[in-house]
Amino acid sequence: MNNQKYESEYCPSAINAGKEYAGTTQCKGCQRMPKVSVLTPVYNTNPEHLRECIDSVLRQTFMDFEFIILNDSPENTELEKQILAYDDPRVRYVKNEKNLGISASRNKLIQMARGEYIAIMDHDDVSHQTRFAQQVKFLDENPYVGVVGAWAQWFGDKNFVRKNPELDTDIKIRLTDVCAIMHTSAMIRKSVMTNNNVWYEDKYTPAEDYRLWGRLMEFTDFYNIQEVLVDYRCASDNTSTRMRKQMAVAHESIKMQICNQYPAYRTAFERNIRRVRMRLFGKIPLIKIKNRWALLFDCIPLVKIKD
Image 1 (cartoon, rainbow, N blue to C red):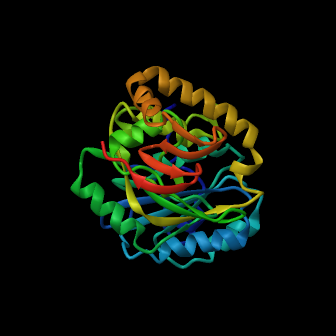
Image 2: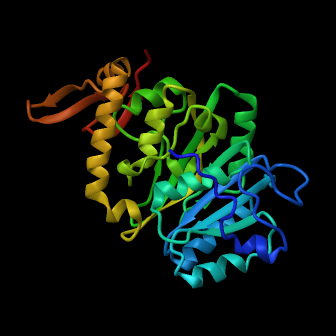
């Protein structure tokens, strides 16, 4: 990651407010730094979805934040007009001179961020009103935790609650198999990334979030609030769906690296998924033990088995 600063970046919202965009170090006219920097890159986003996303951020019960929206589709003037229509001093709009891609845009946003904490907010998702308040409170009270996520309600093409483990060890065990922190639900202690020179990596796009958590495993603890705080839009035209093959390849590469670096976590994962099958008449699976749950007919949870 280079050390280039973006202090001269074109920032229409700052120009309209009659002040300069101040990059990463100071903000002329500001009395104090915000506690949280909400970072949202946009790229030819559906205007209705973007409006829902922005509105959900501006309705937060926790209000000490800056909201930096970076347009990575600079030719899309309609998106620019929509964002600039928001008359809220917390909204800071910036656009790239040319398309940079998602990982480079995310890194650019982090360099611009002035907050102690970074709230990830993807351009077509919706945050519940108390999300920031709960996550800020948790990070304030737990300085050893650098990343706090939450459960997410998937809606659209699929509808279910995405639940992830609560505690650090369980999260890291799950990271040897899947991305156990929902990216759009995450709040990150900025210093954990910048002090350890950990950034998003373009070669792992569109699984750049999974790679980020894999890198941060060495430096900090994780936590997931056991409550739905984000609604995740599942649609056929979003990045995860359109780039499914690239996602699978990147995911397997990241997974292999995590497993090689943290064999004890992988061993624990494999131990947790050992399956004990009892088959009715030798053919129909009657009881399966998976992740400490006894499942009837392979799908109905009966009882959780204690250690």
